[in-house]
Amino acid sequence: MIADPFDFQSRLVPARRDLAAASLKGRVDAEAFVEGTDHSVAVPILNLWTRPETRAGLATQLLFGEAFTVFETRPDGFCWGQARTDGYVGYVCVDGLGAPRVMGQAVTAPRTHVYSAPDIKAPVINSLPCLALVSVSGTEGSFAALETGGYVPACHLETPAGDFVDQSLRFQSVPYLWGGRSFEGIDCSGLVQVALLSKGRSAPRDSDMQQAWLGRELCDDEPLRRGDLIFWKGHVGIMVDGRTLLHANAFHMAVAREELATAVARIAASGGGQVTARRRMD
Picture 1 (cartoon, rainbow, N blue to C red):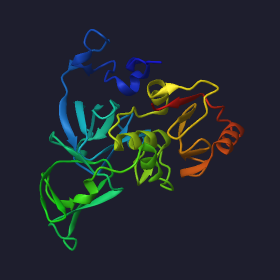
Picture 2 (cartoon, helix red, strand yellow):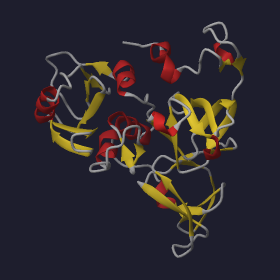
Picture 3 (tube, one colour):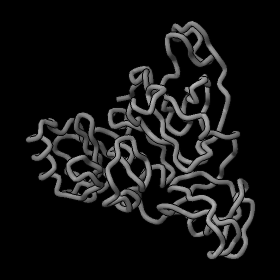
Picture 4 (cartoon, helix red, strand yellow):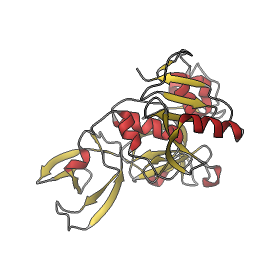
């Protein structure tokens, strides 16, 4: 099934009653249309909310170097716009954004320190999460020099081995965090997205979008295998093999690996319903 982004309008379409992206003129009703301005995330992890207040609850997170288009800057320190990585729309703190940059490489380690000099004893000036985007200006010994300043171990930028399931398994025991996208905390759909991005495959942010757009629906008689995605309403997990599920969940409050049958029974018993889809990432 191919879904239209307007099915997820509040999350993927930069349009409100009072303001919308100029590219949407003629497609949506709004009082005003504006051209966006491009920015890059300038802090390690930048929270995105659905409303301009931190009490609104975390919707997702942006990572250092990711692009964000701003359509409105508010006097309260928030700006409203859209992330380029997955199209998510929401509010971020303007202080977390910087000038637009072309970032060519991604951090592949769970986290990497940015040193002031190419020396493991040099002061650390920053710390970047997995999938932070950087641009390298050169190398000095075992360090990569960043165009934004500082040095990171070059091995922390190497292409990760294995498939996207291997990347998801690195997150085992990472704390559960609604809206999280890093080793500091992650949610179920964030785990799927980050694992796929680690292998260069784009993915939408939320589980309902992933169910609509990722892979193909399995027939009832097709046995499960490694890499298949299992969906419930509001939840998703990754099959490690034909019987074992890996998922970030609020029961364990962590990324946990367990028998699929155990998870299915527990989720049903707790009121979470039955499996809604099984999809294969061909």
